[in-house]
Image 1 (cartoon, rainbow, N blue to C red):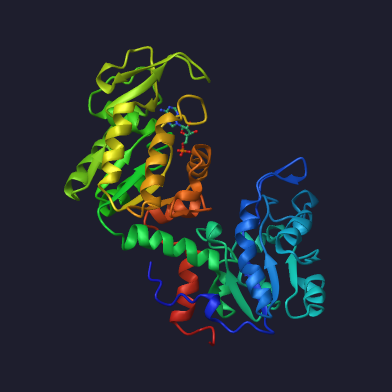
Image 2: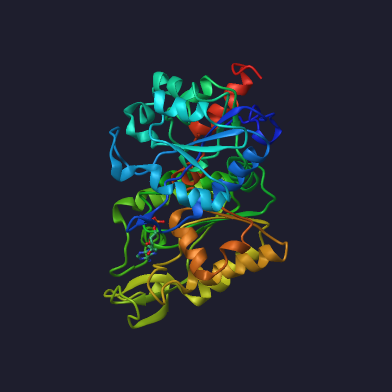
Length: 408
Ligand code: AMP
């Protein structure tokens, strides 16, 4: 992805301008309350900065899946108080994201004010990347800022089409994500290791295939390691594995060899016959897994070996747990390696970048998310970047400037 034309809004003159900001306010809710405010907390500093610099800040986002229809269940109005609380200043609400209701609220804004628009996905044009719908949105702003890396793998009207219509910039959260991923993947300090874990090989084939061309050491953990072990002739008993992907695993091993990338698999495993918390468990070498057992975590010898591998590297990318980390004690392997990576990062010996919902949950459970160099708030977009794919919502920001369309 050529990002030469990408411009940060921190370098733009925003004073007195109507700045239309695409955020990701799609926070999880429970019982009508925000159950995890991370996404709001992350987007707020960028909004506050724009307001302080005298912009009229107009925030737009999707929320849930209303499928192109107005549905009060998915109204963004319920987030106004949370957003205002985090900003420390009032937030106005426009009960439509386009048309007269939005135009009237925006017309009444003073410099430094913040307005939240109603859910973009109440209109089918949003997900259809409809230029006319983007045109309606663009009427509300003088500048466009995308600060929603986590939705930039989707070409939607508010992430892609709108960049054809307004001078477009990356917000601070977007810049942070891009810089972290570029420094870990495109121009890393070598040697670089990647941990790719999680349940299944089948969902991460493009990640594994791209990683072997990019990193020096590819650590494979979780259920997907079982498929690789099985492909190499080991018995994995009743473990989660995908025998149909044996050939895929062998192809990835061959591609790694050709690219001079070392694939690192577990050498021992924590096994149990039941998949439940506190299940009786034991540690065996991967060659000694009984027929009635499941591999649910990497064992202590593997943790020691993986720690040595990470210690020998300068950069680490992490997506996916090494075991069934939600169930005690099968998170021990993931937590131990996470603590090692965090300690090396704190000592200035490692740049560590992690992302993906389960990975963030595992790092939080290990208490080390704050010690990693960067933890991405994005799930799908983070994975697509690891797959080497162009993210339309990022590429559009750069292309727009590169071809001079947006009249800077
Ligand atoms: P993913 O969504 O592909 O990143 O997979 C994450 C899930 O994989 C988590 O819910 C883990 O509990 C699960 N997982 C990891 N290792 C294993 C394993 N050895 N056996 C069963 N599930 C696993």
